[in-house]
Image 1 (cartoon, rainbow, N blue to C red):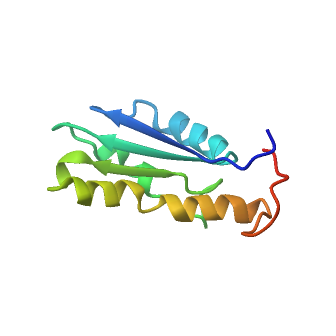
Image 2: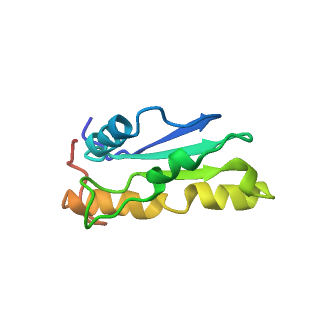
Length: 112
């Protein structure tokens, strides 16, 4: 309580989202929280239905970008996979705290 915290949710999946509209709304609702969601598609499934997860457009979409989708099989090394999975997290974290008016060097007296 009273400490700054940020959560990264990792979801491993072997299939597509069944209800794109509902999933998108849940992600918009969750974007108000200190949260990033990383979804890794595993296996040979057709993940084309997951492309919307990485297509956030701040000009037309509500909320903030909290989601990153990657296909496990697209990466030849664990280092490349790790970089792809984590590359958006720092910006998402900074954007969340900036939108909350919390800047580096401020005292921790914040509660979400």
